[in-house]
Image 1: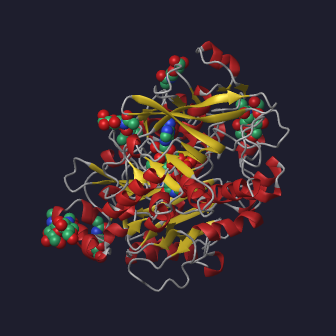
Image 2: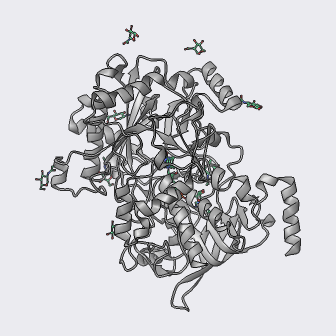
Length: 610
Ligand SMILES: Cc1cc2nc3c(=O)[nH]c(=O)nc-3n(C[C@H](O)[C@H](O)[C@H](O)COP(=O)(O)OP(=O)(O)OC[C@H]3O[C@@H](n4cnc5c(N)ncnc54)[C@H](O)[C@@H]3O)c2cc1C
Ligand SMILES: *[C@@H]1O[C@H](CO)[C@@H](O)[C@H](O)[C@H]1NC(C)=O
Ligand SMILES: *[C@@H]1O[C@H](CO)[C@@H](O)[C@H](O)[C@H]1NC(C)=O
Ligand SMILES: *[C@@H]1O[C@H](CO)[C@@H](O)[C@H](O)[C@H]1NC(C)=O
Ligand SMILES: *[C@@H]1O[C@H](CO)[C@@H](O)[C@H](O)[C@H]1NC(C)=O
Ligand SMILES: *[C@@H]1O[C@H](CO)[C@@H](O)[C@H](O)[C@H]1NC(C)=O
Ligand SMILES: *[C@@H]1O[C@H](CO)[C@@H](O)[C@H](O)[C@H]1NC(C)=O
Ligand SMILES: *[C@@H]1O[C@H](CO)[C@@H](O)[C@H](O)[C@H]1NC(C)=O
Ligand SMILES: *[C@@H]1O[C@H](CO)[C@@H](O)[C@H](O)[C@H]1NC(C)=O
């Protein structure tokens, strides 16, 4: 034991910032910890947020030892993860990616599409919400990360509380966790932000940086706000859509601080935290399954987790709890390979059933995404920096020297949240899936630049553009297994555009976007739509959507929470695996929700081991 700690100290002298982040399993001081957390460290591409939050909060108690196992690579010095505008290398088939491809999507005319999940410390917070733009060479796509910070509606959280029977998940109870997570930060250009957000619902002393955009697009910004004055009934201004009341058009807030992307790795595993003696992180450690199931006490427990590094399998033991935070694809995958899931399906693959929980991997929910783009009579666009090598290099140099300029943000400037009309014909046959009358069905995000999606970008001519993206919650995808080999990728079915409601809502969102630019202020600005979606018949628009829609990277619900006595669900409201002991953080919502689930999850664990 003594020897181990003195070795650690030496390592600390050599590389103080990374003292506790190990690349090689042979450097790990031990294989037994109070808590073993799987996944979710600080990547710059995908989310992986929750695990780092729990690791940070648990190690506030010096008596707890924590090991984090992350399959991916270090985020340290990965420029595409640091520069908000870049994510070039992150979203292609490469070392920062899991390289998933979806099953043929029936709603997308059987297309299969790449499904991005980060394989890097920080998980998907490293490359959240993405914008595709032309690179200067017009050959490579640069995908910028939106890093969009939205909490959801108060009704969303109150519904979690109602559905799970635990008032702890209500908006009022979760609100302090948003404040605990958030470190409100001035934008990179230090402009006057009065009237662009409501300080009363933000916190400046949390951990994860959030800011307004730090580079202005004066004409575009003006036109958006002017639209809220010219068409206030349909597009009212909302000072702050993170107040619990989302409806209306508001200024974008992003997880960016000081001109750099803020991820769960750069925040919750910052040097001052990672230096704690009781926190170890091991990279390149892909967990295959939970091991040593034990039912002798009546309750199921697992002794540890098995992981692969460099072709060999190892086991890390947890004496208190194992926390699974490997995202909405990884979490059901590991559970099923551990024998937890639909027992019939698992046995058919030759995996012994340990716990029959048919909901594992089911009810997967993703959001379809469709881009509308217009060419514009303005050179004040993102394209003017990304189409032109001289200006691209100038902008990059400016970012490099002062962390300012057009590369300090992701390209989205504002978001409009709105509801379908109450008398929409779709409601004749479909129950409103939203959490309540103050919760949106449609999100339209807007910005300068050719588009937010590879297909639309590839189809767009050279020039200057603005674009909007429409999305809403879809239903009924799944994560299932193709074999009993834990290192085979799982089968990812997003269920995109499978329901009448999804198709209706995306069509309606397209109409809203076209009505938005009908405001008089856009008259001399917009030249023409890249593809005129407003002139398409319902059937033609339907076909266009199936051929061009993508997803928003918001997969949730594959390890869903349900009331303690429910016959469905994967975890109880305390995030413990049903009929078992040892907690599981579910893959939750978008990043802000993921952070607060991590925050409350950590509190629940601390409470259990007081
Ligand atoms: C391209 C993209 C853009 C997004 N944009 C936004 C946005 O703008 N705003 C927003 O709010 N949200 C956005 N999101 C969603 C947000 O990033 C996620 O909701 C959040 O990161 C989820 O966190 P998580 O911990 O559940 O999972 P993840 O972030 O997926 O993290 C899981 C981690 O576990 C690791 N892991 C997986 N399997 C294993 C294994 N077997 N062994 C060990 N480690 C493993 C992964 O490598 C990863 O680091 C985006 C997501 C993507 C993919
Ligand atoms: C994804 O593909 C790239 C390129 O083929 C490869 O280098 C990388 O290791 C793959 N990622 C994983 C998690 O296997
Ligand atoms: C998609 O695949 C299904 C199942 O194979 C098939 O029934 C359907 O006709 C296909 N749809 C299209 C548009 O090709
Ligand atoms: C999906 O979720 C609903 C609740 O929203 C639940 O009633 C249903 O049983 C779930 N299905 C599965 C397979 O878990
Ligand atoms: C662009 O705007 C200028 C005035 O600012 C006008 O002269 C020109 O005709 C416009 N071009 C187009 C294509 O609308
Ligand atoms: C590229 O930008 C430079 C610097 O602003 C400018 O001088 C040049 O005309 C631009 N080139 C094109 C093709 O627009
Ligand atoms: C960024 O700055 C570093 C030195 O501070 C320099 O080595 C590097 O070349 C710069 N990169 C760019 C793109 O300007
Ligand atoms: C609702 O369902 C009925 C019966 O199937 C059908 O006749 C009607 O057209 C549907 N309404 C809408 C708006 O789709
Ligand atoms: C979008 O859909 C249309 C019509 O279905 C199709 O012709 C077009 O090629 C698609 N665009 C892209 C960029 O795939």
